[in-house]
Image: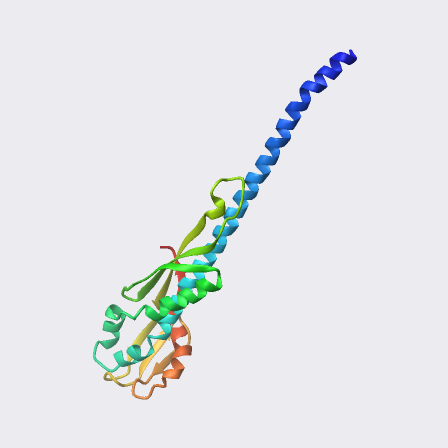
Length: 203
């Protein structure tokens, strides 16, 4: 009986080793998946920040052409429909935010549309997933994409002829007026947030 028990124990030991090795491999695999997910989340956060920064910078540049549009008949409608801001500064801002998140901008593209302009940004991380039991992760960088929209959020009414003060009411808030003949561009930073919303969207 003792010899049989020893034989059974000897046969069970290799099975035990295999089971322990399998569990260790599964644990490492789950760790690798978690590490990849964390890296992906970090990359998406960098892309979101870069797209928002680009859209906010673009919004900041709209002051002079927006106010100038109030000076001509139909000018505001034409501005909202046709104006195309220069994307150089917004894309530079996107790169600055990407760099602060250890990433680089792969592409930065504006999309112009009536009442809504979009900034599409793609980034690539400078860091990798790292060494794991899954081959190739030590050199694999992550690419993430995000889109931010600049959305006109107001109704407006001209008090008189073009060039005279224009009344705006945005998202149901208290109204305000802009006099294009006596407008301080330094006030645009505050006004722009009321007139144009910036937020992330899908695609």
